[in-house]
Structure formats: structure tokens, C-alpha cells
Image (tube, rainbow over all chains, first blue to last red; front, side, top):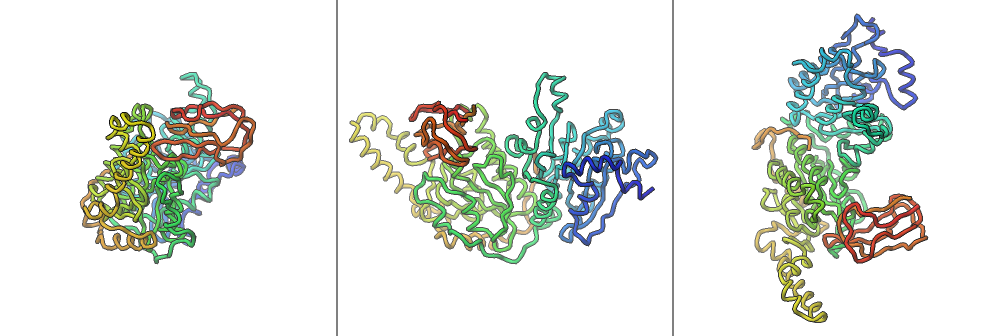
Length: 500
Length: 70
């Protein structure tokens, strides 16, 4: 009987999955865990009296990743499309409880059509029903890392498993998530839409922000999860493990990457590459709100979070989605003892009626809340400019950074010279003739620039240190070391990593 | 017929391509200015301009069309 259960569902379901590049759940687990790691399974005999429901369609247990214990849940889509019955839910609840007691990460390998509607009374509404899974996830949030690998559907209520995880990796073409299927949408609201458009992986990773990483196939998803966990501690009680320091990748240094002209685009990822250990940058939400870049990296071997404005997308201006993206990432780093390095080149938050109506003020406030709440070490670097609330969003001086560092050409101001002169001197300038006005505008702008010169800012102790581009990486590393940060001795509010 | 739209509110400074001209994916087809920043407008895929839909020097809101292409 054990052998029969271990085989999962009928061969034809395995074949159908294989045609779509979908692996058997137990194979996914085998690839996820270390090659020499045993998999200690629980609940193998769930629903064993029913020959059609081996393990009740889910595999749960523990094993090791990078030598450290983790808990795993994997839907088996060869068994009634991975749907949830009462015992499926109970097994998931128990592996979550195990992870909570042992303070170890949880990896959810999701591939499920959702609830078995025929069993709904026993698995949906009750105290040990599906809602309890999400209750557990929220209680686990920020206590242990929770990673979701989405290999297939995660429909209706099941969509909340990815929603409460810290990161969601989606396999393009196979992964999907939606509260209501296209079939249901047509019947209940009259909408006709394809599965991809409704809840496909690419849509979620680019438009909705429900997906963090888009990958082409299952082995890539599994490799990404393993890599991600190498930056994370096992729980919020510990700091991430250090690695030996590695120099940044060879290539253009910061002096070459950051233009002196404040209005020309550059690629923030080139700046990141010039600062972090070679090959260490692991981007999160690459395709969503690309005007801000977030991800994990190492600086001199130490795991950190990076938040960087991306000038080559929308001028690096902060929008509703970028505020949400950065806020959540900051909460993630704060939960798991990852210092955060802010690389600022930000003209500010977007203005205009469209974004006002979209609530940019409250989304920006959300980001500034996250910056204020974070008690991990923060290092704020002004690469080029930081105007207005953009300075606050990037952990400016008032937000308790270890240090505010600035390159020699940096600018910090309420707004840029053009907008400022226009605001303050509008009437005076309007009274002048065209040629006189142009000259006066230039004079006033130059005067403004002198006023906000970085040396003046350092003289006022607004900026803690002016750093030549070639020295910036070492200066950041030094500040992180000097922080004396200890996970067991910090002020912290347990808030998890809330969905935004 | 597809459209390239403004990704943020701002001013269309100039078009880099005229009607009938082709472009590659990732090529700059127009220059936009917003928040005092120069924003290159890049083509999402290769194509050929069939119509210019905005006036250089004028305000274009987020989501409004800049040009049509095939």
C-alpha cells in the first residue's frame, strides 16, 4: 500500500503533466531538498481507505536545504487535480504547526485546482477548515520565511496561499491564480476572458504584482527558491549567514555609471553591480513597477536588501505600485534581520491628477511607514538626487539610517532647481521680457544649486559623509559592520510581511 | 493596429520616427519629459509607424496614445 500511495495518481495524469513540463510532486521535493537530504514525510496514509486519493493529494514533511531544516507542502496534481479535501487541509495545517514549533522555513509547492466542492462542509468553513491555513500563514509571516512556488493553478481560495507568502515564483504558461475562473466569470458576471489574461503567470508578475519572479520552467523555480533561502535565516530569531567576501563584478565603476547631468537616464542595475559582491544580486519583482529595483545581495559577504530607484524607467519617479513594492520588501528585510541599502536617485513621487486619484499620497505614506518601522541597519546613499518625499522614501536622515552618504555630485532638495525657481519667482519672472527672463532664470537656478550643494549639506550635518564613487562600496560595508546589529537585541514590532 | 501609450503624465518633447519609418524592439521612438526628467519612449516590439497621435510640446496623460504602428 505504501508503494501505491507513493506513486500518486493514475499514470495518465502523470503523462499529461509531463507533456506540459510539470514534474511529479515528489520529484519537485527531491529537487528542492539537498541531494543528501532525507525527506521525512507525515500523513502519507491520509485517506488511505480511498484508493483514488493517495496521501489525499498533498505531500507534507521536512528535509534540508543548504544543510538547514525546512518544511515543505506539495500539492499532487495527479490526484483529483491537486484539489483539497478535509485531510488535505489538515495535513497542511499540521506542517505549518510543525514549522512554527521548530521555527523553520516553509516552502509551498502549489499546483491545485482548489477545494473539492463535494467536500466543502468538512473542509471550507470550520475551525480546522481552509481558512485556518491562511490564519496560520499570517501568524507565521515574518517569523519564518514562507516561499511559494506556483507550478499550476491556485484557484479561488487557494490563491491565498501565494498571497500570504513572502515571495511567489511562477512558472510561465503553467502557473495561474485567480479568485474566479474564466468559466465562472462568464457565468456570474458575463465577462469573456482567457485564462492567461485572467490570472496567468506573466500578468501577475508584470501587472498585478501578485507574482514576484517569472521563470520558464520548474527546475528554474526550484533553483530560485534554493538561492533565495541562502540569503534568509531559518527564522526571525537569527541573522542570515555570512559568506566570504567577493569583489564586485569587473566593469564600469560608479563614476562612469552615474551621469553628472541630473536629468539623463542611467541603469540602476549597473550601479548595483558596481557595489555588491559579484553575482550576488537576486532581484525580486523585476517585471513589476520597474521604476524601483529591489532585491537581495551581498556586500563583503554580508546579506543585505537593496532598494534602488531606476532612472531609466519613468525617470525613477515613485508611483503607487513602486511604493507598494518597496514597502513590502522593506518589511521583508526587517522581519529577517537583513540590513537595507538605499541607492537614491529620485525626482520625487509622481504628481498629477491621475496619480492623486489613485491615492499616491497614502501609498507613499505606506512606504514611509515601512522605512520608519524598520529597525535593521539602513544605509542611505544619494547617488545623484533625492528630492522631496523621495528623500524620505529612501531612508533620508530623519529615518534613523546608520549614515546618509552622498557622492560628490549629489543633490538633496525639496524640489529640483527648475521647479523651485518657477514656484518661488513666478510673478517676478513673468514681469520680465523674454531675454531678460531667460538670463534671470539661469541665475536663480545657479543660486539654488549653490544653496543645495552637497558640501553645504555636509557642513550642516544633513549628509554624514561625502564619498568618492570608487570608495562607496567599502564605505557601505564599513557602516554595516559598525552598526553592531544583533537580532536578539533590537527593538521590534512583530508585524509580519503583510500583503500590500 | 497597435498603439504606444504614455507610461506617465508629462510632455511629449519630440518623435524620433516619422510616419512610415520602421523601428526595432527597444528602440527609442520618442522623447518624453516628466518631473523634469528626460524619459526615452522605447518600442515594445518591432514595427512601423502608421500614425502620430500626439502633438510635440503638448501634455499627454498616463495611458493616452502617442503613436499607432503595425
